[in-house]
Image (cartoon, rainbow, N blue to C red; front, top):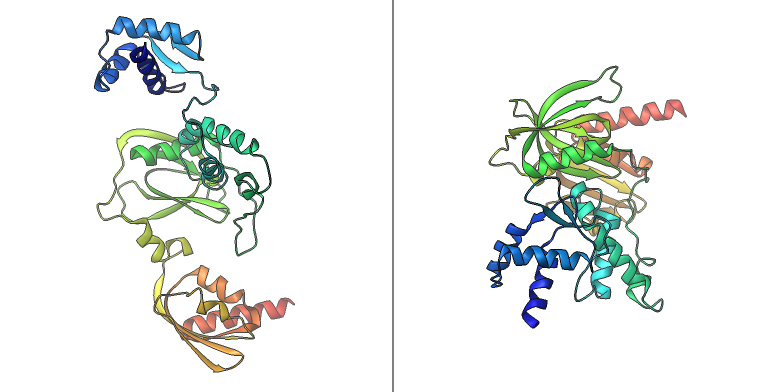
Length: 330
């Protein structure tokens, strides 16, 4: 009896959630690797018996039949989630679901449901349940509403990236009058603020490109394998300024911040090699090797009159021109 219960429990854990499925033969082989040596016929009888007690379904459209948990079946797990695990799962759903493959999010839905249910049953405001109302992750810049990404597009893009397959896309760049089409090799997904980007290469070209997911109108996963450079590193691309938009060039930034505007740089450096000085009590002078990107320009312009760029000359003139144009409009 004990061996039968152990085998049944192992079977229930091996059966996937729909639309995935597993045959009695595959279950028999996997149970054998767990030291449960039984015939395939025994497994078939077990599945029929267990389906009377649990939400198991059999796909009988073709042989051998495939067995699954119903897609909406409650999660069966022993032991249940403890409060710390439940809190972790709920926060994963809140903050990571937009960068997880859609298929993974679907597979984890039952875990997320179980986690929310577990937290809802905790008794008081000193429990892990209350943590969700005590913690927020916010952007240091103006928050924007995330653009809508087509569900089928997101699923195709993430699937191609996960399985390293080429992707046929139809997209429209900002301000373009017509759609463009192409075959891309997906390399990485990056979420920057409210916008999600696909880093990729087109056809046989080697230059890295950015496609915003919400501008992709159609995406189709192809059978051909994607070309992934052997030395590809998404972190190196980010550090070189790809997400700052446009080609970045290294510069030595020298700038003075006034009236407390640069105080945060003592705790949150703009570069690991930055140097800070105090010419006077109201001024912080910064020297730092950085990448010249649009993001850097926006950051500097955000300080308004409380910053002055001294070097390089090209950046100083660019910032001065922007400030002059803004002054004219006001």
